[in-house]
Image 1 (cartoon, helix red, strand yellow):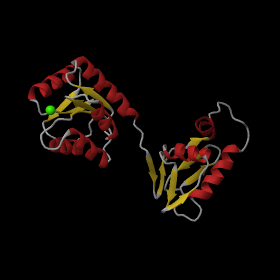
Image 2: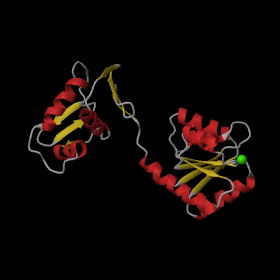
Image 3: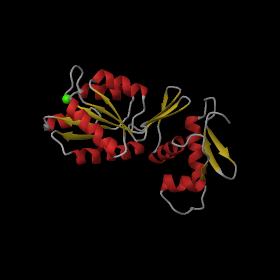
Length: 224
Ligand code: CA
């Protein structure tokens, strides 16, 4: 697990770096926000320890800039003040966790480790395939700039297929993931929903994205 530590106070930075290295983390250190943004743009980190009080661009500004660029590295914010509003501001800016100074180093290490686990579970919120997009927050789906209405079930079906592009999804796995059934209801339920979905996402568009693999299931992909 590779971690970026952003802290201008040399003693604290060195202390944190050594503690994380002792736990087996690979650690890079930056002492200002601009350097941190440059490092994050060039290296995929599994986590970031970001102090709010930095010379020049502060930690909150670094965090906002990261998220604006679509960087989803899990971030643990450090603050000397530990004020409630700063904590809220930090979480609103896209922080994953928050630790007020002074902190116990063992707690920081534990929180960084948790950050790594969380990072592995981060799922993109906007899914794309060709010109088809699905926003999993607003539940909006669009193809070629046209928005279409979907029922909750159709949405779940499309999300499931879009999270496994190019992979054949068997009927049974669709039934389990989209309907939460652990048995085959023995009806043409899936086929009916696939047909409806196909009318929405493929009718009038090229290339066709939703393909049937006879006898096995369905796959969402650009090429037939
Ligand atoms: Ca600082």
